[in-house]
Length: 269
Image (cartoon, rainbow, N blue to C red; front, side):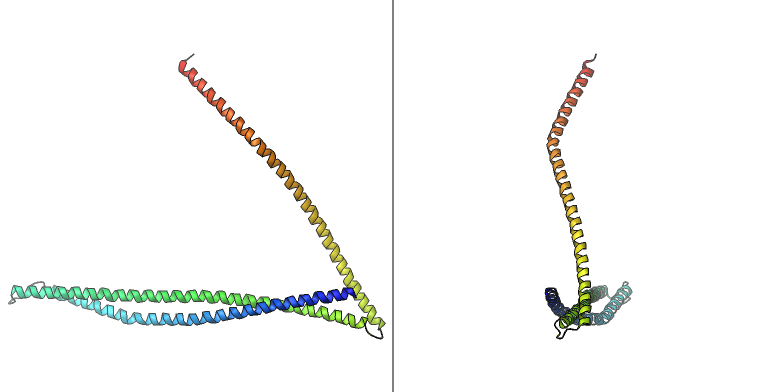
């Protein structure tokens, strides 16, 4: 029967399109899963960078604390030597003060450098942690993409099953129609099924036709309204220059009246 042949061709085409879509999605899913794996590897490396950066801080902080202690010691030594002890020549005392000041300056320079290294290490930790967070966001986005693709693939299976079921029904109908000898009861059942299918198609066609008529009526109404608005806009476009000319004339008349009033007030009655 032409109807069954057409329906079989339609279902087979739909199955082929579904298979092509699933193949595309499967390839896409593989790429997305690889992206997740690569991002997870990047996160492991980034987390290792955080650990290494954090491990540098404690020794640098200890070195900075030791440098601060040397500064404090040099300051105390300089404070203790602020007054010359008895029995020491002034020149020797001044030389000692100069040496203590030099030592304090060197200690302060070393402390400043040590604290700078601590700050640099802390910034390195912050940068490494920021990199980990960026990779985490990348992993989240890639994982979401994988889940979305998996969900889309999952929705294809019911549709595939539905198409296979319909194909099986048509094959069963064809088998009963072409059976030799014919089974009257089976043919009657198939005839009833085909009649029901025909009724459904006719109802769907009728609804679609009514929807098309409504859409055509709405479109015609919109076209008419568009034409009315176009005409109205054209009229307004023609009226605007006239209104502007009237406004200019009124402005000139107002200016002339104001000048006349000013003259009258100046000259008096």
